Image (cartoon, rainbow, N blue to C red; front, side):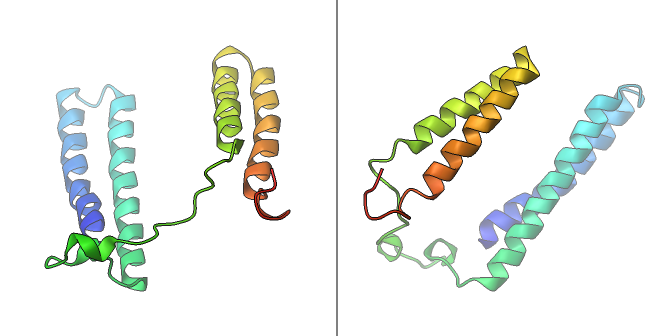
Length: 133
């Protein structure tokens, strides 16, 4: 994870410089762009800090070894439910929530309620037995 941490950490000075240049070019009269660029720099710094802290607490991955071989990363990468319909429902409720932000808050509340139901269904899918849908 050190590569990812360095990537984000090294982007922070870039965004600081871009923020200052943008501020001077607009004579600090356009606060939205300056604020957005400054917050982007802060976000990149936070992600880089988190990744560097995480890299210190976990074992090195095969990707972190410069002499590593592709076969070192072989094996299971995690468990994914191949027959689950819950992610489709969750994506649908997310689209309803985004529609609610554009069209009306009452639609957002319906999407949020359905989103809670689908998220709980997805998380608890295997708590009732193997392959219980």
